[in-house]
Length: 148
Figure (cartoon, helix red, strand yellow):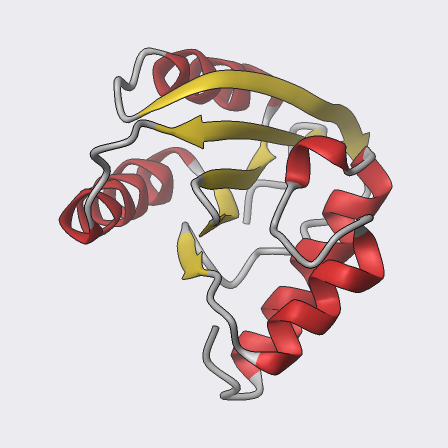
């Protein structure tokens, strides 16, 4: 697929603006899917308790350009980089971008408790490894049809 360049993963967290609506999430998903597919970026965006946690995978330059564009989006504030590192393979290769809205579903709350200090989705308190493990397990939950 995009094997000639080194692969990188970027994970960041941010806070949604107070007036964010479901239609904004749909817009983010549609634009991300369209843009990311063209440039070879895969990833996942989770949203809950007014917090975004996103992972992007692809070439270093493409991820950097995408992240810089994301930072300009007025639908979120207080973005913090959690991790940016070279990787051997993609973990989210099936999706050019998937948005998972986190709710009070039992399996999802169990995952949050497993990877953070509270039952509230608070990715700001997660390490890079905790964030990645959480997103991988959330992906597995979602793919098994246990919709988040």
